[in-house]
Length: 393
Ligand code: PHB
Image (cartoon, rainbow, N blue to C red; front, side):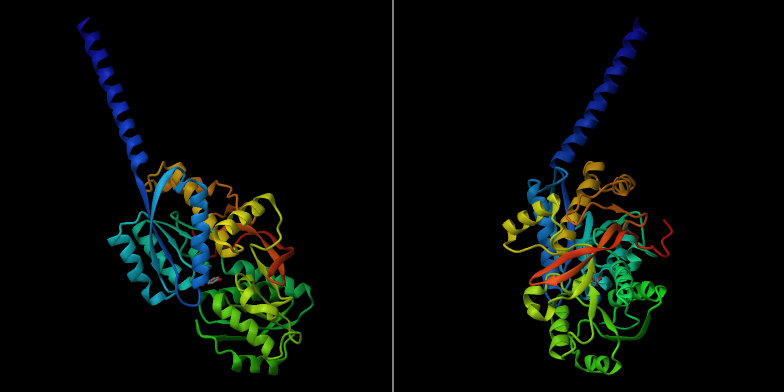
């Protein structure tokens, strides 16, 4: 009788303890705010890109009562100026002073590489909402690093096939000399030369300079069949205008990764008309998902969304998937990772899964500039996965 009494008492204590722990947990998740560090450019060549990413991210939040997976979020924002030399100081501020629990950023590949290195060293969750640096989901891949955008290789590779199919044989490439330009050209060259084409000259200038004149003169002298280019933001606006002003438009076809004409068409005007580009988003997809996203975005910001807005929106969606799986506890890296690895992200671009290295496996659209739209005219490459070279995962 006595023993039975003790056993019952112990069981009751155990149940009370379990309830206590659960209760505590429940309270901590209910009141716990997830602190996020967002590093994007608010100034410089890529300022508009950073704004669109932030807008997309906030749209998702607003659609969900200001929460991610039901959890309150606090966002600490830093203007990284797309300046890799300031990246380490900016990341340290977020991680050490502000004690953020996860990082989001950035636009520029050089900045994102420094973020990936820091995320790896400190085992912090990182979601990259633009920068395509191949290494982020290649040699530097990690269980805690994810991308909601693309690898630089992806649109380049897709365009290499398109340009070859269009019968061009000799191509000159023109880009900024840094990871994104080099890798975009690398993807293009890989596909184009595999299909029998030849890249006869690789022209470049330092990021973020835009003195194109000498290079355009050289291009005109070489007279290639076509040009492949990677530029974005304010630099892309200037290149497209200068190309037309130099009398090259209509003479030597200009092709590009879609950043050349995304979010830039108002400023480029008729100089961009007819340009063909490849990208993982386009105008005129006309799916219920994209139409809903576009009207909600327009309602909030009084402007049409672009690829950057989509990537920001999807970065928020991805964080929500992970946070739901770990019930707001970002220290549970393995569970966070597992949830994203098996997730289907319902993106306005079309739904996608992540590759083993955590880069979107996605359709790359062929788009044609008509007025102020990058109209979809086909799929250049279906479910294209980055090769993730050097990723041991
Ligand atoms: C990059 O640096 O990776 C980058 C920047 C702007 C873009 C695309 C890629 O539009």
